[in-house]
Image 1 (cartoon, one colour):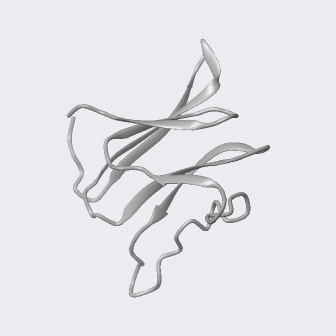
Image 2 (tube, rainbow, N blue to C red; image 1 turned 120 degrees about the vertical axis):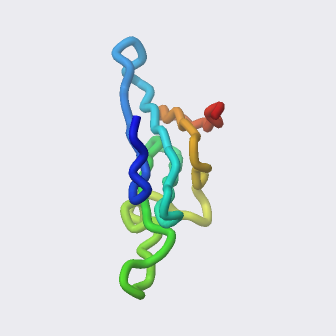
Length: 101
């Protein structure tokens, strides 16, 4: 596999044998600018989004913009994933596991 030093890999998938779970994998960000956040809100469920930790062209970063409509970051559970981590999201919670390198 070739590594592009300009990109991070992030992907999510659902296993057909476990359709109530979403697996989110946060890979290495070679620029050090992009992160992944997972969150849980009671009555709503678990969500995830990617965001830029550093702005583009001297602009301020737009952290958590995709989740602000769903999550209250003072009251709801959330976590910024380390690189090389998988998060398993369900309707009632999420959990994170570090991948072995």
